[in-house]
Length: 184
Image 1 (cartoon, rainbow, N blue to C red):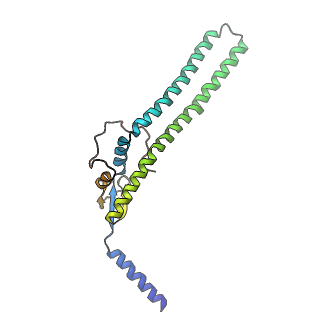
Image 2 (cartoon, rainbow, N blue to C red):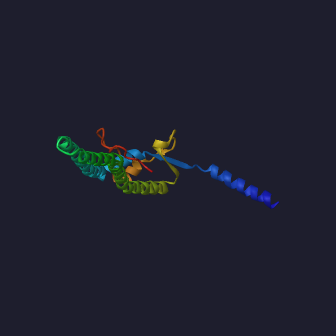
Image 3 (cartoon, rainbow, N blue to C red):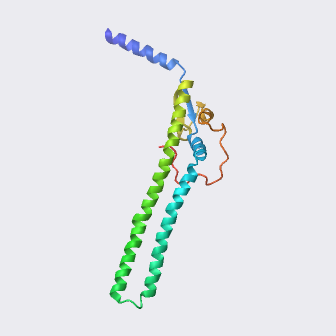
């Protein structure tokens, strides 16, 4: 008897939950992240950081090229053993540049972009959460990952909460740095 009563209570509560209209919204996260990145100068900060690495990599490459040219010039005047020793050393440094230095620089650039994006993502998530609570949304979906968006679009509300214009800015091509991840 207790089991029947318990099943009845669960069934009634389930029906009442399904009977209530559940508000579902969606938001264009990518659009907002791009606007926040512009507002907070993320692109410029990243490009400045990238420029430093690019100059350093070019400096190392130029040193290797210069050393290779000098070695080629000295080849006829150096004893074979010394030439081979310098040549092997140069080859090791070139290999290290290609296999270690360059990939590490790429990894650091990716880490910097992630580091620059974290505060933007935190602002965006806080704004979405606030809008959802204030307006009684049960779920907020990311538009980019949604096949059908039948809920309410809250993009403009979130943009307003973040101090952005309701409409996205026109952005020239290539404004976002390559490989910039959106969301995690």
